[in-house]
Length: 389
Figure 1 (cartoon, one colour):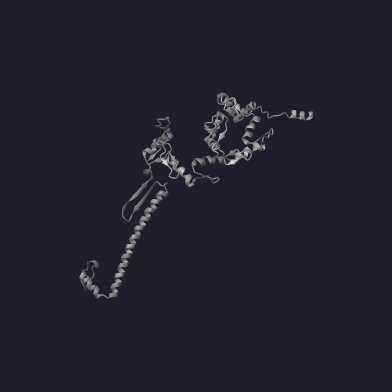
Figure 2: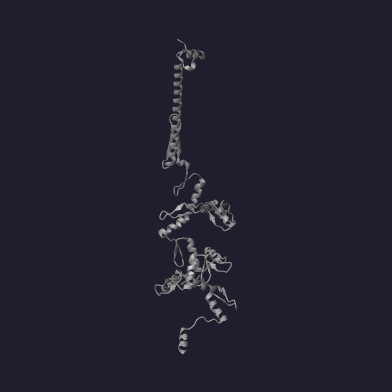
């Protein structure tokens, strides 16, 4: 019996190990070696699985923190390693709280900015127009309206914007993305403000009211345009013919009449129009059709807006008021004509004698004095002539 028989394998001398291996059968030696390797592999695999389980436990606990923010405190412990438990406190992550509404912030500056929403403080003022803002970053954006700076450019069409948010909205015109959807009808919009305005079509809300006539609108822009009907202001003028408009959109459409971009032509007189609806209205001049009839007196009109104006002659309503003398009028055209009395504007000039007129049909009547044209005949005089013959 060898002295080293009961010792661990690692303590047996190399020479004795060799002698022992030679004395054993070759098959048994190979079997013992495979069993030892399998045992070592199983132990290694067990340690690896234990480590993985601990990692999964930590990951799950960290996920619970993010998914369940209502819990005030979470503890992650490692009992096997004897490490101190790791604690996570949401209160410590946002230690600055607003005493007015209870909202929490990570930094003192964040809380300071928020407090201005309660106090109304606006310490940052524009040196050009004097307008004030609660944050310096908003002032920086405002300054660009004076300088014309637009540092954010679209990589697709090259359009520039003064704000990154405006560029993000613009990019949706290229991608077709409309992230704001109406839950009632499913219509989608590029901007959140567009969805907000659209929702008023379902709710019937009209928060913007005219102080002159009381008419309400769903959008502020519509109210601004409406107010011009009372003042007679038309800030957008055609550089070619001088015709004025309340908004830029109809001016843009009007300019195409000078550039011969009208796609729809009248088969009778050749006049061109941008829209088919405009051509249809024009054709009524030739056909004499007046589809909009007054229910009170039966008078017909080619346009619904003309019928609406006419109805006020029966109700006595005068929706359009002169901003200078306060006189009221049934229609917008009547107000526009009246305003020329104050401005002494006579845009329709006679090419023969130079005399000016406030409205076009007065010029048309005047031109007959030069041509000696008399297009209107008395029907009774014609009947008398027939009898005499």
